[in-house]
Image 1 (cartoon, rainbow, N blue to C red):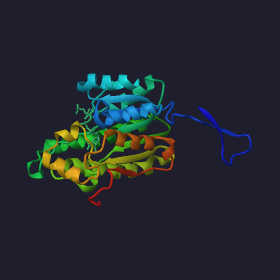
Image 2 (image 1 turned 180 degrees about the vertical axis):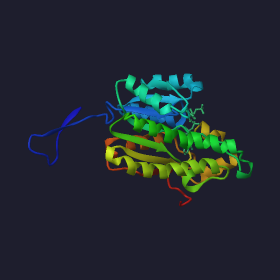
Image 3 (image 1 turned 135 degrees about the vertical axis):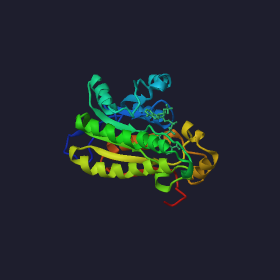
Image 4 (image 1 turned 60 degrees about the vertical axis):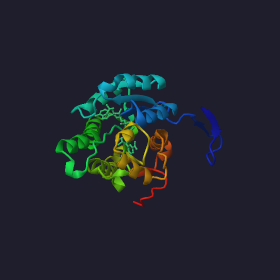
Length: 264
Ligand code: NDP
């Protein structure tokens, strides 16, 4: 670290400015094998964090490649498992630490017009995008698995603010995450834990490549990142939320979508 004089500080006091703001922090990123989650893992590691990358066991080889590039820890785990939070706490404990940062990024779409939306598609999207986050955080909080000053960052979506055709299930979950973050922030601020969300606009990943063309074009038009934003745009915003630079930010949802033309 670089030693600099403290501006306005007592004479002779020096501040040690670490070049990497997340040095010594243990960060969990779900859905880290590819797309936005892989970019989040990469930028957190670049800023000094040790990253535990979580993804479905079926994606273990992709996850392994992503984690080996950043010196991260591979944690194959389906976040919808009933005890996923307990497993994450155990992995962190094995590394000798508490969780300083958790980024709930794993998410899915199962797009259909509402009239064709089978109830299992509602349930599945609700469980991955909302239920799993709620259960994990409950278990981590109950087990006191978070370190001092921990940061919880949830990935919502502009789709949860403005909605998209064919995404009633997805929009409902992403909107719920915004309210959840605000309420949980109030509940746990006394423990020194901050809870925030990022609402990305249209980002080019495998998820958006898979959604129907009509939905994709509407989503793209609603964002002035008209060619689609990049995963790194979200990763840098998440890293801000996880860093000391955001020490006064709690219960907030940050839109990362360029100028949101829908005006929502
Ligand atoms: P991707 O589909 O490219 O990547 C998501 C990753 O999460 C995949 O590796 C996926 O694994 C994993 N995952 C899904 N379900 C689970 C689970 N139950 N347990 C563990 N891992 C799981 O998505 P993106 O990178 O595009 O999206 C990341 C997040 O950002 C999501 O929450 C999404 O809703 C949100 N978002 C994305 C936007 C975009 O434009 N791309 C816009 C706004 C929000 P598998 O391949 O096995 O499913």
